[in-house]
Image (cartoon, rainbow, N blue to C red; front, top):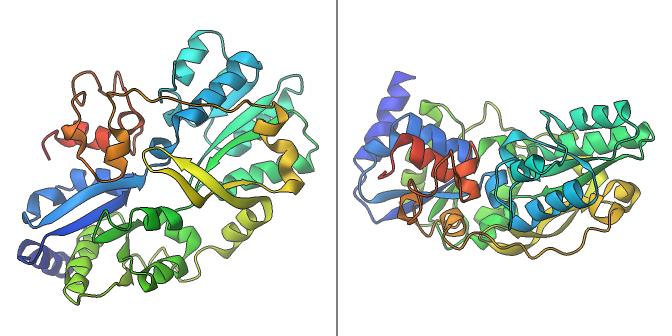
Length: 349
């Protein structure tokens, strides 16, 4: 292991080729790269930029407004993961709605929300389904369980997204991607191979120092060949076929749809919605949620950060008006957000 790390470091530190922009898509990668001090060994010709791999960060303001509508206007008990509580909507966050009397509960899995619905038949329960392919199978399982139990007081508000079309949308933003290991553990290698055939380069990376350094070294070496490439640098977790059971679960319960991404706009075919057989559990239809036109705080540059157009520290409110204690944007709220990483590990990096 020591020899592998030493060799990878040498490749990275000795690189003196053309400018190389590498996008770490996964928010956990961003935090680990900071925590491990990897940025400090990069030569000036290698730039690491953040991407849209934090599910809370890319969830649009519209979705928060929809959730607040359900909680305040329709009296629904909203169940959500903790990170989403403080993400600002147009007028307030879910934490603000809770302060005004909304019933907002933090859960750890979608099945927790099903249990709450089963134990409280007099309450209407909606789970906020935010995430990529990693967490979507669990949402699908929850919907299936609710249907099997005959629950009529359970629904989901979906903002589930899939990554491949996002890479296409960001094709010109980076020379290569660090693909998120957790997502590819579900989806496998084929989508990444297809992207390489279409001119998008990247490697699947793990989360240890050895795995991250190896992934960066592989990108440097493969980039020298001057053609699109793909390498799985996380084979101990990511199998070529991924997780077929998880993918079958998604395929059974959900279908592709166009989806709004914070900062990226609408990306065709990048979202997931419930299929007709499970449409009774769609909160938008069940409660006739009106169209929302969410407006983010104009001072926030989360959208530019998620596209790799700027660093968090380039934002005028970063570290002053916008802090983890008083976030203006989603990228500062989430534990996987780029802004929270820059704030925690060094504003000027």
